[in-house]
Length: 633
Image (cartoon, rainbow, N blue to C red; front, side, top):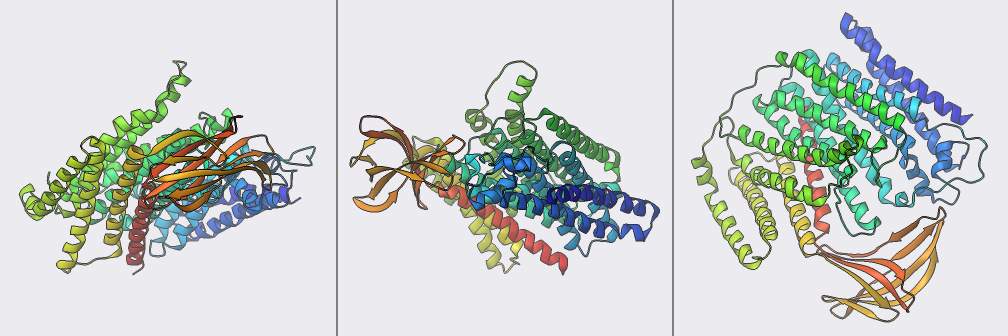
């Protein structure tokens, strides 16, 4: 009976979302305040019923209710409690329901924390977000019902994909979904502005903190996904340019451009059309990512669905959402207030150039992601586009963007000249040039390392100089400014970690016998024993290795090979982590000659990749909090 209540809760969610769209729309059209004021109560009702549905499905997992097809397909009695919880969003039906829950929660948060926004405006935003929610609840009810019954009821359920049985999957998808779905908020703001034919500084002030929060969550989600893939998949890499990784990276690039475009639009009244288009493009790419993951067109550790009917539904929704929003822009763009002009050399032009680089970079990722799929769909053959393409095309586009990133804050609004900027930064540029020459002598055989170290110095010195100048001139230093500095330093740290670990990381495939050792630089691994081991729902083999650094024991590493009840094998790496390097050991096969194979990695500065990413997110949250504080004041 409880399962039927869950299904009814979804139907009631559909009913209240529909009313949330229809009644306030009539109220706006007829200027009937009583109908307009229904928007928030109806949104609360949608929020209540969608979370009732979520809680009932969660109860199905916690109580091993195998009468539910989705539960029986993704959980069993042996599954640990944490993974029973994460299994809810570990496969297609539950992940889409989770997506809907987050979307409605975002909508409610906007309505609660936007008290100063006029009622008509917030009502329009709620209606737009309701239209998006309507598409997803229809998708769930007609193609992806998580409450479908299974008969006869099995005594035991299936195994959750062992790849997903990890703590990282308890936090990575929620963070990523918060970012993905959060891009719907600036999308709703700009569509509402287009409907009103007005996009002034007030609108932009309202939307900017929400954009920053969504961008921060998207950053955290991508960082956690990279960290999870690194330690869980057993291949020692932190980014593979997997199509589904790209699906989250593309909206991140556009969101980065949007965050900066909003600054110019709010402060200077420029870039209004650019801001609108970026908001539409950012959410469109989030929907595209949904299509890629859930349509069955991809084979990936991240992808869920294989039902083509679901793919067709999402594709239709994608076309309607993207086509409708761009059509609305084409119809109403002339209603937007005229952009303020600015000089060819100015802070506005610098930010515009940076945004163009970001959008072009996104386009190269989009091309590399979709081109193989289009060829395959048209029957023109199968190709694989991997890291060499992205490193050759994407990286050169981002280099000038990084150069510009820290120079633009020194430029003046509206008009500036190179002579003034050069005089202001001549000592900074001279010191960086001398540092770069020094790097060239030390790392003359590695041009990419010299360039990365030069960019690191370029960002750090400019950022520190900008901060000291503010302090010296007793200018205002608010959280938004601190957020910018922190985010820029995060990019520098990420760049340093990514380059050093890629260029100087060591990978060795070795065989080691019991009580024998393998030496890697100043590290030594001694294999003490091989033993059987087991967990709640798996059994396997593990190696016990002593790790020495400069002849001093620093750790015991225990890599494992697991066999789950589904029969799927998994490699669990052992990692000795540090800020300056990781020692990463993965257990291979029994070589039947008294020794075992191992894959050993030395990863210098790899932790800086994730530290840099988290600093970027922290900077975004600082700026968002500053904007919320100002807005409430």
